[in-house]
Length: 418
Image 1 (cartoon, rainbow, N blue to C red):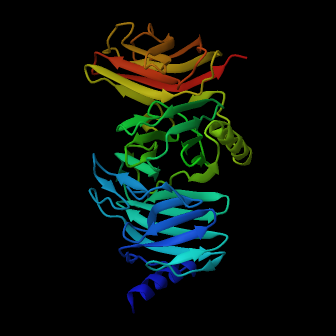
Image 2 (cartoon, helix red, strand yellow):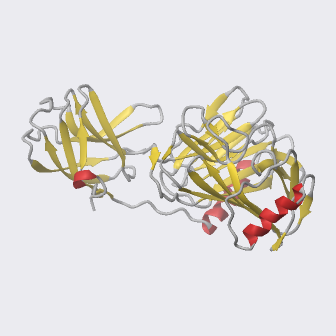
Image 3 (tube, rainbow, N blue to C red):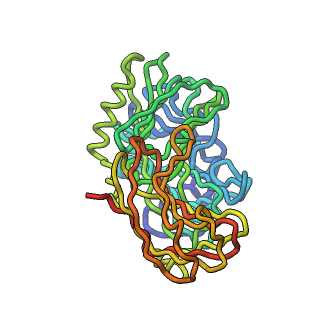
């Protein structure tokens, strides 16, 4: 069986529904998928990942770095695309269709159509990762999810990363709450977006050619992950880093992550207005979920059916996300039990609701259970607090300081005061 015949054979296996554990062979070089005004180059060398993206012939995504799904099972131990520091991605299947019909991919091929789609399944350490890419005249949709075949350590997991050209000069983001932020690229090895907690979409623009790109989270959900622009000379790279446990248990299935990439044309003075118009239409088509008004933690999934915070003799803090809106009054209620051996300091064993503002200054909205008896008995506590005019990200902080003993929390709830 020839080399190219083998590749096509693996494609046919997936299309026909037959599964195989064999690895799909790669090859040095690329093949090209064209649906005007988009062109996508796929690399056979780096595990069948996107290598370059064009919009109306303009290179919006350059080949100066890796795309794909990148898992790290330790510090700088990356797996995926061209990374092999932590292991090698193994492609189990790759299937390509053009206008709904199976198509053969090969080195140097240029495939054209009205809808080109490919699906890839690969193994990255102990994770089975599913990728689906669909290219139409409206844009490029990328869907991903994974399942854990065995317990998996997660140091970081980049679900989406794009090597956008270093020729873009400005960026704009939209948040789920309808607010915006913008900035300028300097190609100075800096980072942008690191303090942004929730992003619904992002955009980059090159005024020299009057073209830009939008990335919209079709499957957005609150606290889904972290976001970064890496401001290098060779690219202005976007990263989406999924929020996941440090250890993913065997059998866990991830949420479905989906992003839509769309190119656009605009005059430099009007590009932000154009992006806001286009993304407003996307919001109508793919509206983000409304966050719940209250916050509830039952801890039924934990040993003992409650949260135990064991001291380490110094400082222990457990942080839990809270659904809070600005300038609103809330009631908090919970049950707490403190060991007789814990510290008696009023600020040593208690619950606090607050946030770090955009200047990284900490704001406390309210502190509770500072005087609860340390008698190894459950006590019901409650209180009220008001949020400030601006909410970056509200959290519940549970402290246990200067002790090796434990405190326990159960039935933790925050409700808006009607």
